[in-house]
Each structure stands twice: as structure tokens, then as C-alpha cells.
Length: 536
Image (cartoon, rainbow, N blue to C red):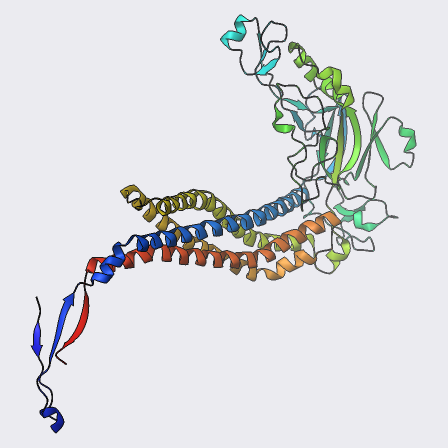
């Protein structure tokens, strides 16, 4: 239906008054060309290419973001673990006395075992070595019905046992309830700040290893040695404690070390990661032993440091003697095929000691005290906590929504691109909408985290710089502080890059979502306003 309206021209000019009457028609008209365009296979194919392209870009940016996040998070966690380990060391109470107990498994009151390590025990197994079974061997797990018929025997598990005796003695230590943050230190001239305080240590040696105690307090032990000839230590600075195996334990309160606070029993050397233990390469491992504690030093610091050189060696003992002294060999007698006793003389367990991690007196005198650095690290930890939470959020988000949803969405678009005509299953349409809104929601969460992380890094930038420039401790500890500070400062541009990638993903998602909507809107209208002139 057409709507026609007559329009009278104005008579302002005599020329127009002579002109005949004109008619302009306004009518909605279906654009057949547009309709054909929307329905054409070529146009639909272009839509599928755009969707596939944007889905591919979203997936690619997710992978890039994941790699950056995983690398930064791993470095930050390694440094943060070492900082926590440092403060565990400083919060430990120092040792003031040592006793050796024979034929007992408990220490006197106020004393605790020096050596603390657990033998993991064994799991349930099946012994088919003395039978005609298809594969004569020892297997983990209960014997099957077929194995029982082949005369295989069940092996009962053995619970984990404590490794506390060393050279057949229970070595017990007593600690003073004072940690390094509470410890009073002398000045560079060896003078204690309090009137009722006395200096512990050799007055003729370096005062950087000395501490001050009240008159009624005991001085800390600063060094421990185990030897078979005590006559080699004849300077009168060491106190003697008897052990078995013709061994003698000597301890000193005036050696040039800070107070001893930590001990570690391990094969090889102490790992830089606290809960890891070194093992001898290619060693015999009983099949039924719990392998969870036999993985060795596997987590490096700064991609290279595996061992903690701040520990000092005390003495070594063969695995055979250590297991015999602690009753493990007797417990393993029930396992007929345990061959550990045949090999264990070839392996050595070493006992190590660790003093308080050093902090220079020169730093204390200029105001950079242990308490001050502790406060600064606590401030930095707030920034690190948000940064860590953000990294974890990104990792899990990218694993779940990024890879899973991204790969499925990409696969759907690839399927639509290949298939002619494109798939129009309702489930695929619903899936597309779900992934779209998940990406949108997660992206806004990322923007929030980036804002908070950058704000904290800017707020505590001075404290972070102090950590980076710190030279108050040993080289390893200085490097740990520096790595934590560097990882936080370097995370700022990473966060901004994450923000840019997130905005880019939002843009891709908007293009992918809005383009079909606009096309469908135009198509659903089916007409446009078109002005045509008639009879001009």
C-alpha cells in the first residue's frame, strides 16, 4: 500500500508559481538486494569466518596470558617461600644445652630430640618371588585371587617410624624461649645496651656473631661437632657429650657463628626447599617403600640453586647403622625380600646444623634492623598476596574458562566454518551465549585485580626497593630478597600487559557477539525508509 501526499510549493518566486504540481512518495519498501545478501551463502560464510577468527584470537591471547602468568607466579612463589623460611629461622628459639640419652626414646623435661626425620614405612604388597607365577616379583597392593592360588604371599604394611637416634644415642636439646627478633645484639665495639646484660661469645673475636643476654639467662650454643678424637679440639671452647660408635659430640658457645637453631638429617646436602630431602642417585629403593619422601631436591631457587649452603655439616652415618639404631631393620625382617640391608652400608645420612641467618651489625646501626626489615617484608607481603591471588585466579580461569571454553568455542566455530550450511543446533547457540557471558564476567574480575595489584605495588614501592638493594645478609639471602622485590616490580608491566590483553579479549568478544546481532536485527526488520521522487 502506498501513501501519497500532495505538497504545495511556496509561491515566493514567480518562477515557481508557473511550475506544475509535484508529488513525493514516502513508503516502506522491502530491499530485495539486502534480503538476498543476508541469505546468500557467501555472506553467511563471511560471518562464520569472522566468528572463527575472533575465537582463534581469544584462544591465542589466553595461551600467551597463561604462559606469562605461570612463569611470574612460579618465581614469586619460590621467593616468597624462601622469605617465609627466613622468618621461620629468625622466629626459632636458640639452643642452650645438649644431652645424650642411651636406651630411651624420650627426652628429659624441657628437652626435645635434635634429630627429627620420619622413615616413611611401607605399603601393603604381594610377594610372588618364590612361586611359579607368570611374573615372579613383589607388587604393590593386596594379592589377587589368582596370585593367592599361585602361592603368592601378602606382605603387611609397616607404619612410618621416627629417626631420632644418632650413633645409637637420643640427642636431646634445650632451647631458650627467645628468637632472633627479640635477641639483643651488641654494638660494633662489643658493648651491650642494657645495664643488666652480658656479652655471649669470645670477647676477642668478631662481635657481629655475639648476642647479649640477661644475667640469669644461658648463652646460646653456636657450633656443634661430632668426632672420634676429641683431643683434636683442645682450645677449651667445646663441651663434650658421649655417643656410641666411639664418637664424641662437642658443642661451643664462643665459636664465631650466630646461635644454632635448626637441624636437618638428609642424604647428600640440604635442599634449598625446606620440605625436600636429597637422595643418592641410582640408589636401591624397595618397591613397597613410600616414595613420597624419596624424590630428591627438585625445586630450584632462581632456576639454578638446589642446595642451601647456609647449613654446616656435623657428621655422617651409614643408612644401615641409622636404621639399625632406630629399629627399622628389625621391623623389616618380616619382609623376606627386602634387600636394603645389603645395600644400605653404601649410603650415608648427614646431620647438618644451621645458625640464625646473618644480619650485619652495620645495618642495625644505621636503622635497618631485623625488626625494620621484618615490617617492610610484611608490607611487601600484602602486595605479594594480592599479586599471588591474581595469578592463581588467572591460572585457574585460563585452565577452566580459557582453555576448555575457548577450545570448545573455537572448535564450534571451526565446525561451522567447514560445514555447509552452518550448524544451527540450539545447544550450540546456548553454549555460545554461556561462553560469551563467562568471558565478560571474568574479564571484569581481571581488571579489578590488576587495579588492586598495581595500587599495592605503587604504595609499597619504597619497601620493595629496599629489599632489592639489601646487602645486610649472606649472598643467598640477599639474592632471595632481591628476587622477591624484582618479581613484584617486574609484575607491574606484566599486569598492565594482562590488562591490555583482557581489553583485547573483550573487544574480540564484542565483535563476535554483536556482529551477528546487528545483522539479524536488520534482517528481521525487512524494510527501510526510502524516499523516491516521482514526476520530477
